Length: 252
Image (tube, rainbow, N blue to C red):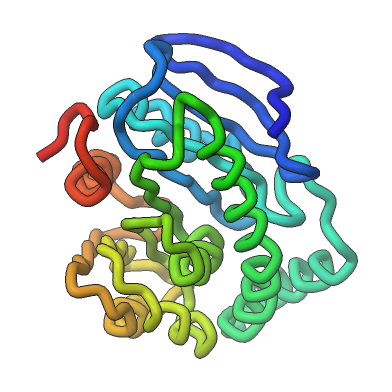
């Protein structure tokens, strides 16, 4: 892990880093080791590691709950170049959306490919993060993200035993993703945007049913996928604090 920039403001240390050619950001308390969990935050499609929602959640977790948080750019997003195939998938998705055609088949192929590439990148990033003294290998690890971040997060959580809880939602349900969900037994909080014009509610129900977790909760809110209420951020933080170990401010 190479740190390339560091700033401190409002009690948060924000550091840009690279792991190989993977660019990311780490947010930690200015006071040093937090004792709280590390939350890996995924970004939505067409966004990046510094999208306003990612930065806002990360800083809120650090300042209000004493967590640490990290985000990386998914393949072909942010500071990473897109492959020719990724561009073709992007174009196919845009054409389907403009024509009012189902997005599921295009999204399954595109996001499935991104997940295959991103899962090992997240695992390498977690290796590097846990080597830092302010994080360490004993800290609880959670994952959070919607849409593309859920398509990546579900196979990541299924493959990575260090991730002990996840807050995800807002993604189509295709067979390989359902198969990954069936392998997951850690606590899950699943978010459904009740009035999403693109994503049928049944996709959320199918994925929620697929998780093998004994502790899983479905949160449904009115509106589309970009209208998740702010209070869900605090609810996610309390969920992570309950399930990922002691030391987090605000733990319930």
